[in-house]
Length: 243
Image (tube, rainbow, N blue to C red):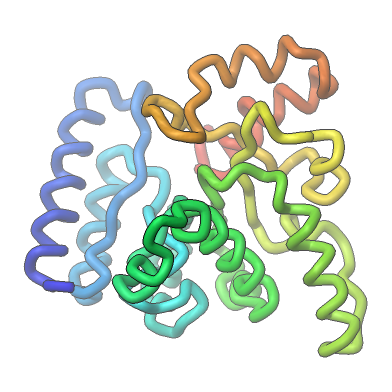
């Protein structure tokens, strides 16, 4: 909640990752942390990140008690589109009130808040306002995608009097990180084969840990090899703007 402290943490973190990237620019790509309480300094941090190997921007489902669809976030999205940096929503939230309210319920804090942010992004048509921005939903799994899109379809019909058309993920420049325990056969008809990725955030011990994710996904035979190749490589390149 302290702008000076937030800026110091983001600034030092971004310089630290920039220094590491300089040692092997093609080996480690990263996402820059924006000091959102110092919005006048956000461009400087994002430009530094872009020039030092960053390929995305880190946000959570709530930022300083603001939804990601709030106009508070719009300046960030403008710069993200200009600099060709993906906006990557990671599991979690930055709302002290919600964090306390969900005390003891990590699923509500970290996972469902992200699913709700996805739903609200599409229902408010926020991606349409920023057509240059690519959006990633990271470490939420992907099993919820059919549920969220099914609910959105019902709301489109009921409240907007229109049909959802096309692929909602592709049409809105959205990618979702799946896990090897997800039922991809059920997810793919909703997500499409071009908008799932495997997250790189697996090197720590929590419910998303899957050290062998890349190897297992292709070898278990549940998904056609050409789709696996997309999930393991091409789709991530598209999300992060990698050549």
